[in-house]
Image 1: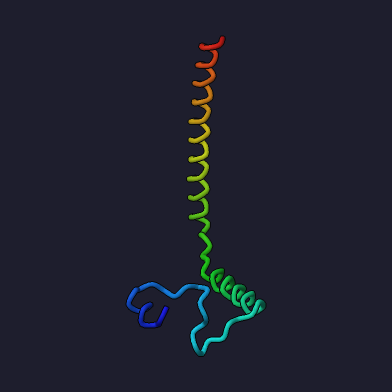
Image 2: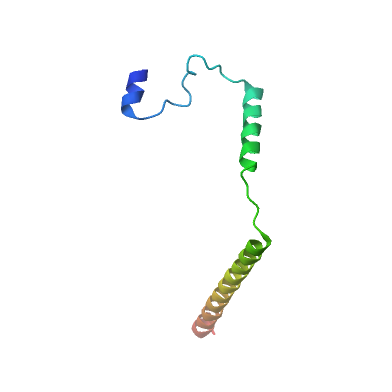
Length: 88
């Protein structure tokens, strides 16, 4: 695909295409080093929750799990009664 065609189509070049002039292709270890640098850069963006936020998240998850447990327990009880009624 020529440069003018990719500019007019609005689609990026394919990942497997040749590197742009002036950029050299990275080797195996160069790609690993780039990956590690990118991982470290992303990890620096991580924000830890405060103690208050952590407690709030804990309570929300606990309430949700208890609600799902109650729902599944009621379904189990209901289906158990239906099975006893049908085959009991």
